[in-house]
Length: 490
Image (cartoon, rainbow, N blue to C red; front, side, top):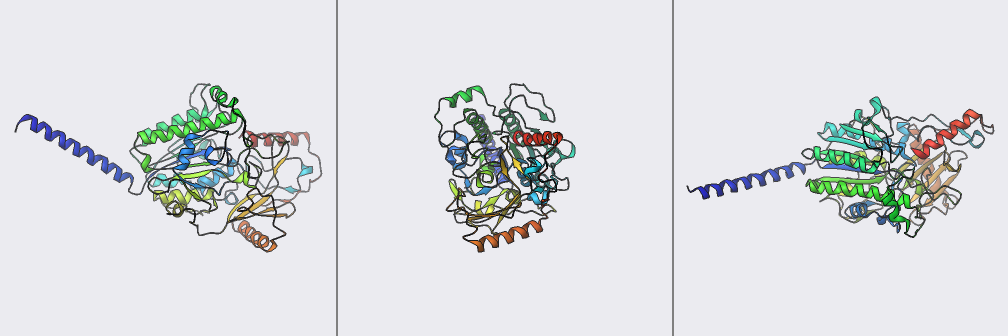
């Protein structure tokens, strides 16, 4: 055999072998274990993205992702960060985890509080299996980078809760502190630094199925952004209640992060085998009125973070599952934080834990040829806060309240006086017209179901406050101030 012919045959077989290896890798990735990337923003309001209606903020990468996804336009989380995170990773409502807020449920002076609040847990109980525990058992590499807020040290840290790699940080966007401590430059911007860690994890994990959580501290206060980003928005005209240049710059940096992660998935040829989820942990800080310290505006939704009105609970959320979800599709089905756990389990083919899961898998909607008409086999989702929340301006974000949403109807039961508020979210998303008296039969039916849900989940309830009307001592006032600042800065 002539030498050129032999060389040609060797090259041909090498090409065939290379093609076979590529096809085998692709087949392995698509055999039922797609990768999952969960990107969680902090305090991003429902309209804080271009794709969600903002004419001031700029988010081209997130907008592009949204248009490639199924967008859930009626998705709800808790009124603030910690209970949302406990529900995301445990699959259980706050009434089961005992985590209802940051720090204590007590807000305001005793003379303002009619009810004595129950204890609030601040760390995710160790007997709860996280979604990462289950995916790790299913053969996934797991990584968590960013805000955790469910116990920073020891057995409560995410590195002990199923995530093989985990670095947490919150509180500052510059000169931040990490757990475990990792050296970095004081000028590093946290959103960029966390993205570097996430991309390194992708590079290390490309040969195995992986579950990555990138939990940004952005766009939470304090308002801190890169100078060049701020200048980008300082000359731009405000629009629709959006006009804070620093906040816009923070959104832009968050958007850059999402773009970098998506591009790296493309570069690693993993994008087609990766489910990408994007959401915020609660509503934006705004919509409270002229006297309040508003950062953004959630209009047409009412109020914002800390409230059980839609501006506090409804968040942007979308899921891209290449080859499964219909790009640009919309779902109006009411969904909530506890749905992610069973959804990711089904996507990964992982087993359920030996604990109650309160949510339902969203896979039927994701796989539907018509997500706009797809329904889940339930009629209600819930929220419960047995305490008080207030902002730095001293105004209540909410008093103790329980909430139930049934398709277009939403009922709030305020626990101080039993007041009911019923809204038709389909015709009145701004929650302006209380229908509790007009449609008392519906209000009564929903209140009964809400009461039964509280009993079945053993929800903690406030009780009459014997100190109501008595002024606080100086030490109690300091405690109140500390708790309020924790709410705003964490």
